[in-house]
Image (tube, rainbow, N blue to C red; front, side, top):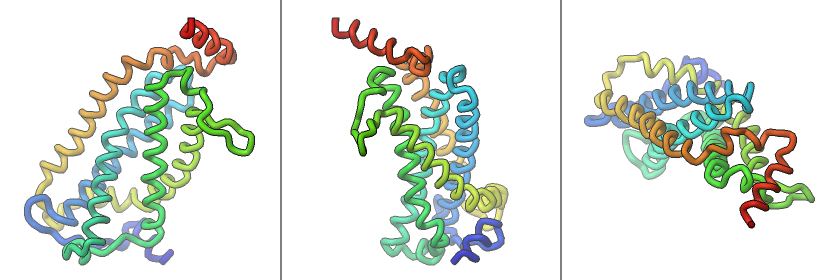
Length: 237
């Protein structure tokens, strides 16, 4: 099991994805997933760069975070489609077979943590800086708010996704550069990835209109507690 995972990660072993008309079947699905995954990798690296100075780059942090959502949903859809087709007994997908067991176990964790990370991030923008510090739940005497949830999700996501990237980046790169087997639907796959990026930009334009408080990054100031109390009192009054 470990040998297969390592060989796949190094690009030495590949699934024989059948090609069928129209969108290419398993072969087309694998290519769309690879393209989307590499696009996401670039965006996630950009998001990680903003963490070097999250106060000064909070506007970029918010923008890239929102931009990530549509491509992440697209990749979840492509991998989810493959899982459904495989487990419902579709011939070409059954013939292609599943990924190595390690990646099958890791996959759901990557999806769950990615959705939690991005979902909590969008929630932070929607509820604002004051709402973000309200307690969601108390665990063992420790209060958990939306910021804590977002930060915790990032830690788990970073570990799971780091392993996932190690196992997938070389095969994905090889797929995007390979012209064999000839797989129909290249234009539509490219359009799908492009559309996810355009939709992400549209979401950024909308969300940034409601993120002024975060872009003032007062939530990161040492006197944030006093500032939040003033805002809450003014809101009540």
